[in-house]
Amino acid sequence: MQSAQDAAAHAAELHKQAIVIDCHSDILIPIADGYVRMGTQVEIPDPKKWQPPFEIAEGSSQGRGWPRDSAFGCIGQYSLPQFRAGGLTAQVCAVFVKDHELERALRRSLEMVWWLHREVEDNDDFELVTTVADIHRIKREGKCGAIMALEGSEALGYDFKFLDLFYKLGVRMAGLAHNRRNYFADGTQYHVHTGGLTDLGKQAVKRMNELGIVVDVGHLNQVGFWETLEIAQAPVVLSHRSPRKYFPLKAEESPFHPAYDVSRGRERLEALAKNGGVFGVFFLVARDVDDVVADIEYVIDLVGPDHVGLGSDLYGLHNAPEGLEDISKVPAITGRMVRRGHSDEVILKVLGGNFVRVFEQVWKG
Image 1 (cartoon, one colour):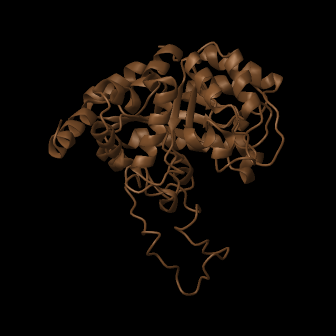
Image 2 (tube, rainbow, N blue to C red; image 1 turned 90 degrees about the vertical axis):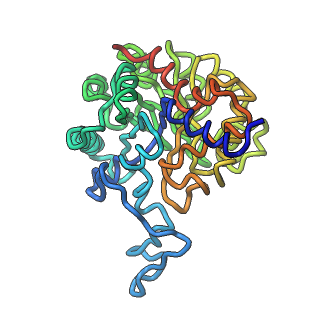
Image 3 (cartoon, helix red, strand yellow; image 1 turned 180 degrees about the horizontal axis):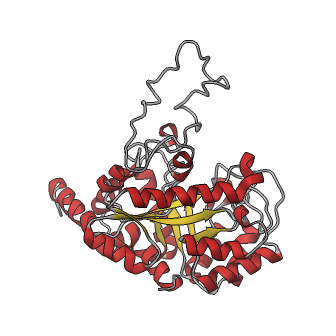
């Protein structure tokens, strides 16, 4: 049995060797809003200690209690210095349009795409990843990369030429919907009776397979999830969710029941595994590192180690798990898994190997 010191050394070396891929971040939102740049790490106050200026009433529309709420999103949790510190090989960066931006969804999405390309131009050790060869090369060269994803397809309107255009701009992953209904599908709307994919949504899944875009089922409801897996001709990903809370063995075990349909958890995970897909475990609703590792182990126990990875979705320090406050802390997961007796092979799969396998099967080139 390894001593604690030997286990820590082994975990550090294993993490250094690993291809590490995180499958979800909203960092492009504050970048496009002009608040931050990818090359600079921003330090934000500890939410437990921060107090608003005396002239701003806490919780008012002016102060919003930041950083105790989500007003500033994931600022301070993702940046190139933090990617380097966390040993990240590639970070999936979402292009997401908020509700009040839907009337200009295409323009807003293109702003985020433009900014990601600008960040790549301005940082020599940061690249846009569009092929699996890119992943292996930047790992060898000690760089890190971004994988561009559409979180919801509102930017496409109802015209597929825009899907082809976003592919040419570098998009390699896309979800049909977020938490709302659009031309393609229903999302996971609480307390709303939702449907599945529209005819346009079914066509979109087929076109994504043809282009080589990974289909993300992370925000689809039950009906849409099953319909997508019936149509998909390639592995899909579920980029960011808590498996125990959204895919419980019994619906009543989830804190989201009955507002959100969390039934058939085991069946859905088994169907995802049969498809060859990967579940990205997110950090957002976890208490601490051990809670995240417990989610990872839940998927491993049900469907094996080939179908789970990381999908952090950090969004505010007040929501961050203890020990995983930002993306630089990802090595803590490796350390926990080593101490809990997982093999090197399993840990390497969880850290990024499983996502690489999906990309190899879906991406062109």
